[in-house]
Image (tube, rainbow, N blue to C red; front, side, top):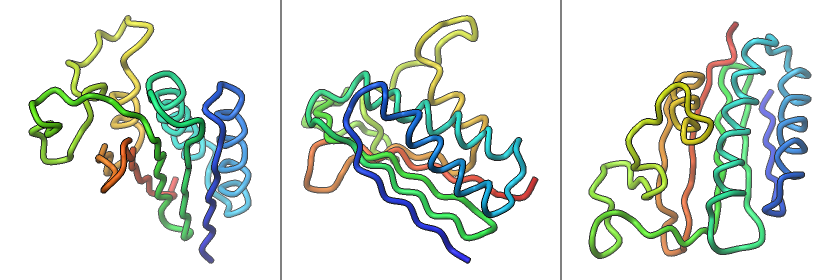
Length: 147
């Protein structure tokens, strides 16, 4: 069975718990172990928090998730107008990462700036891409659903 969720959410703090709970309910329905669900929920929360705090344009953001029983693929898509680190809008990174993601890793004791580190530690295939022909970024991550 394949489950697909697509949500358009307001860029506010109340939206992140809603999307986390919705995705978690779907994963629970598929019989995904609690520890795997917790990893996905934390990674999703970090991606949503980045959009809510840092995207500079757009009132909404999108979350798309696809679960096929073996894997969960999540994309958090924003319309933010983040200025890249290189001239001409090119970040110079093969993954097209935005400037907010280009910063050096935050120290483990930092209160902010560890979202990408957490996503990479908890999931697989983490990519941050520019949206084609639009402002904003796509945070993509995947996670095996096997416990």
